[in-house]
Amino acid sequence: MTRSLCLQFVCWMIVSVCAADEIPKSGVAVSPAEIAADEGAVREAVGRSLPFLEKAGVAWMEERSCMSCHHVPFLLWTHHAAQVKGFNVDPQKLTDWEAWSIKESLEQRNLYRLQNYELGKVDAATLPTTVREKLKPLIETPFKSLDEFHKELTALVTEEELKLYEPAIIKTAERAINAPDRTGGGLDVLGQLLLGGYGSTSELQKPEFRDGVISLMEHLQQPDGFWVPGNQLLTMRQWSQPVANQSTTMWAAIALAEYKASGQVNHVAVEKSVAWQRAQPPAEDNYEWLATRLLFEKHFGSAKDVETFRHALIASRNPDGGWGWQKGVTSDAFTTGLAVYVLAKACAGDADAEIQSACRFLLTSQQPDGSWHTPSKNISDTTDPERLKARDEIYHYWGTAWATLGLLESIPTPSG
Image 1: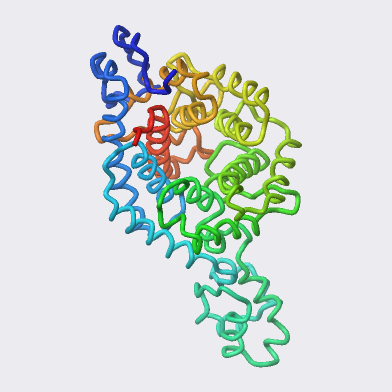
Image 2 (image 1 turned 90 degrees about the vertical axis):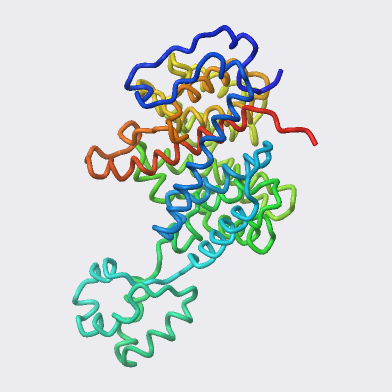
């Protein structure tokens, strides 16, 4: 049985309009005739979403000059996936986006950077004001090695000051192990770059960049086998640090597993992460965790494990066919797109009806500009209106990206 969006029975089905708090009133209504087009309806929806992802993703690069918040990896991932599914994606644009991403990632592998905020945390008795004043030329200057930092430092302070205060200065300047500007954009970003370029001729797949990403991810692994998430995954969700650690660890292991056969990945690193994950308590009430665990089991578990988590994910659906991030939360494009992507990847023909139902939810909730609305208030850990407003932009993009990836995974790859 094909994984395409709809079976023939959809031709006579009437798509109901969900409640206003589940599907925004501005959503594009899809007629039965459009849904009857099966794969064509999905391709039309994706054809509308790609320009939004391009416009907002490029704007993020130009205005923020930042790979953080996953905009750029999602931009690349969705367009590579669309290209594989037969969409006409401008190869020059992809090349340009990849070149920008590679340059940005390589520049963000700094071990030391003095910042005003961090410098202000140093006790005055430890680091005198006179020394702080001398350090001002180093503020926000990145250094990729201790030797580089030491050389600049010795030119600014006296030999006696260096002897007394260098340890405190180095400790203050050292970037946190999971800081985005130390980890090439962040561990979660690195994993998405691997996943987004896998199986393609992308510049991201060239050994000089790809192998460096893999090596960096392995270096960032904790001794126990897990990975620590970046701030986006941790502080912008209603979940605990342990659950965030699990999510990041599973995605990192999934990304690295794709490359194990190439010999570029340390098998021990992947095996340690799997062993660590199996020892953690489940978080099945978190449906984002649940979907990720299903894909994790497809890579590392048994057929029984896959079936267990497939059943649990399907049982967690809302009546409208979509998913919210946890029980009692209205369906959103972010979680629904992720669930469709995982079910299509992990379950082949064993979840066609559920995939079709979820895709219908996505088709009927797409916005006029081709995007999908994902209210951050449903997922975010804050209730502050200003912070929610800022996060709405991020979840809007993430939701559109996952909806697009899910729809793309639901249709067959053109032969030849």
